[in-house]
Length: 372
Image (tube, rainbow, N blue to C red; front, side, top):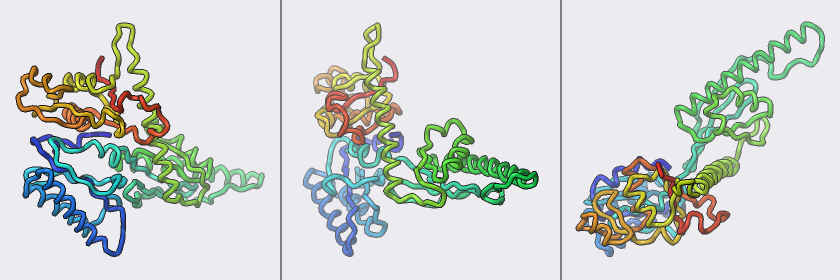
């Protein structure tokens, strides 16, 4: 997950209001339920010490969902009477709406709820062209089309000279159309920055288009087992998107396992556990955080100062570093702040958590390093 969009959360000191709003349940009385959620969240924030202006900003942000309800919900981050960020969620928060008032914004859950949400282009391919759909967790939309030469869709079956000549023209037209479709699909991917290309059509048509795509896109292509004229159901697309995410996470875990083994000089390219991660964060060595939200270390308490690299496993360590006004924070939130400040990435391990070893990474927190 690219964390760049979280920068507004670290441009001013806390404390912060963090609210995860569940708007996934639809009833005839949704507007009233949203109103009740807003009241409940604000009441909880006030109980934890949030100021009146910030509570009002949160209330207004949640109440706005009555007019444009999200399919799953939003995260609302506010301080000093203003909402700094309110990203959409790709899945509803567990346990419904909840709110916290903390030194750092509670961004850890975003990795699970709005992290790896691959955008897919579904390309319905036949010999005459293709239609493109853009699909994601928040819905779909038409994304254009490619129209080729209008020759008969199938070659002739006869064997005399005129029929063979006609068949050659049909084949040349299809090769031209396949190239046109591949070009249009490549442009569509560049414009939408889609993570996944799902090809639907007969075997030959899919193969011909795939072979003509730029090499940079080959790893993004999956072929659906549907013939020409078939339309993918939402469940089909969701399974392909989920499989893409699982493959991505598995790949990063393989990199982590390989990198944490020390080299001949005893240096490792990955670390795990809070003390080692804190040290790497202070030295700006984090390249990618790996976080299993249910791991014991994710909610372990660390100590932070005003700057992102002022982080320590023990309060006394910050005093040694010269920080006089340290505050407690969750390890996952503090490490994500450090990652944002140094343009590192973060990845939730939730998509593969049921199948992975519980101690990888140890305590649920690990990182690939920029240098050893």
